Length: 100
Image (cartoon, rainbow, N blue to C red):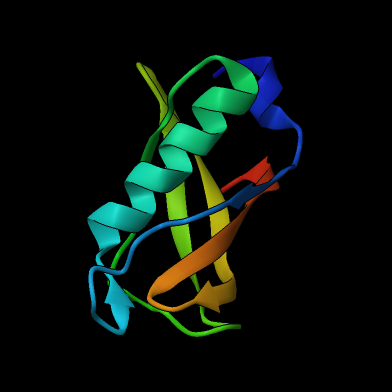
């Protein structure tokens, strides 16, 4: 795994459209986290989220991250920090230590 992913990362993701619903799909959340991490580190990890995320302030869930051929898994937390209409802003925080 890239050393840059080993340090805790806190990222704000702006403008993730909820498409007129009260939830974000697991795939939407994972894709947005991947893009934000790629922008910060230059490397796009694989993020997997287990379920939909409610598009309301304070809603959060745990997801997992892996990087390419490296089987090491890290946890990350995705939290809704604000909602403007049907567009929530998310914060992503990667754990310091591998899951395990």
